[in-house]
Length: 176
Image (cartoon, rainbow, N blue to C red; front, side, top):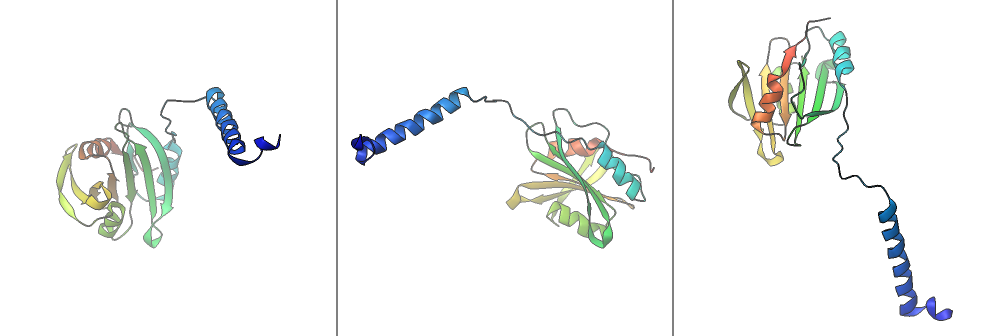
């Protein structure tokens, strides 16, 4: 019995037993081949945000087709301003996020959310002009719209058409 616990044969038997156990586990363990992106409902977060700010809140009227809302939060920005963030996995499985705040100065907030001060052009979305900002080293594109009461930023690794799709879905909800 001693020869099975020492030397090369002992090592080979131990490796075989471990591989057989791992193979058996993989054979009987349930496996999912489907992609799973957690869905996070944001309507309550948007409603709570609306009660804490002095302006009508912007939010998607309807999520773009094939997109999965996967994060939302209210945070404190500079000067105690409230910041609402809604994150998505796009139809192409890239990341897109919508952020809004009345933080001042608006340009500083927009630059921080876009990770860039570099404006590379403009884009017309649903009849409104948005700034395009680009941060190439992080593969991040952003659309920025500065309004008198609030700054809107749509940003992420999604391409320009997908970001524009999210921006086009935004509607201001009445203050309430």
